[in-house]
Image (cartoon, rainbow, N blue to C red; front, top):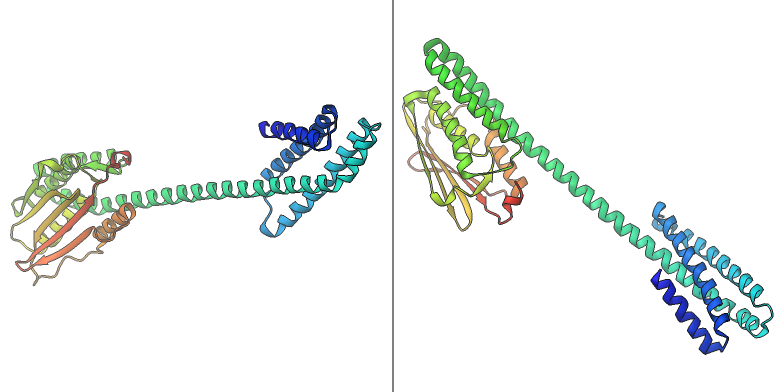
Length: 338
């Protein structure tokens, strides 16, 4: 509106000093043409807000703009010549400038139409981009949740089978295991909505899991956990370590009757959290069959979160130690992700 008023004033001043007509004629000419142009521009903008032409149909918009141009200049001509019918000089001037008025009006309306088309297309693209980003984010979150929940049934089935076996030979130990299993599952449900947890929380969660496994395997399983003090407040994806530790127990203990020690080290270097899980294994014995889903799921989760396929690394040392190393980059805005 301010732009339209400024245009009307400037048009009237220019007409007065160029054509030397009275201020009344100049402001009447400027006001009628300016208001017609303003309201037609508003109409074009509203029309394009509801209907966005395809690229090949923009010509139709220009044709409509041309029709509106003729309508505008003829209505303005009729009104002004009717009001100032007695001013022959002004009538001659208006008829002389009719073509130029039409050209200027068409240029203004065409610019308005094309500017609105561009504006609404950019707005539509922005909304489409936001929608796609939201869809991708939801799909990513759904896949992460699916991966997290798929890891639990395997452990739960194994634990229930162990409870069943213990009820026959050692009911007291079975009761202890059921209590710890309930605490573990309660912690799992509590953390379902938490994408990121602290190292301290994760290690408490892992300790519950290890306590259950120690009930299952008794003296055969020893655990050595070393957590650097400066790592407790750092963050990592929740329930990420349990499949790694489970993998270490499976390959280190399932195919042997001897006792083993599984070692877990948690350190930080160069703002990257490092978790190292070490377990012995017998290369001459066939490993327990499995789908390998646990480590594959972890790699997929890490890739979804960090877009880096190299954050989980496994290696075999010469002294028959299988080592799994997990690296979690720490971000300054990680607390905002929770």
